[in-house]
Image (cartoon, rainbow, N blue to C red; front, side, top):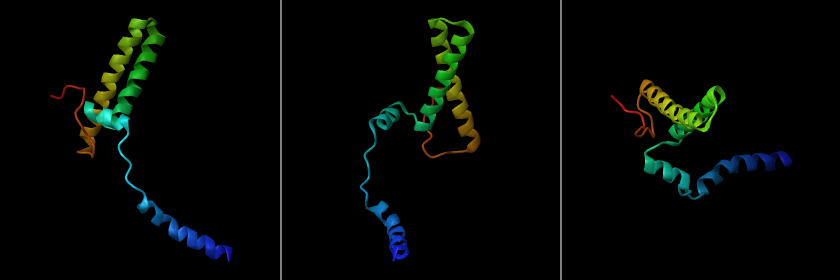
Length: 102
């Protein structure tokens, strides 16, 4: 009896996913869309910013070098994202970039 109940439950579970209403976009996704960034691109830029800031702070120390490292890391992250997107061909959600395209 338990096996039959479990099998019926497993058979019905995928159907419940279709009954859920569509969720509205989160404020973070709306803000990214205003700046023309996809969530993937924002993540790559943020990781580059954090890595550049930590790297230059570790090498040279000081607030100005930390900011310079963050800016350069963000630009390198954006450049890397654009290069990766160009190699993979057109992707869903690819938008404008901070990097200058030539």
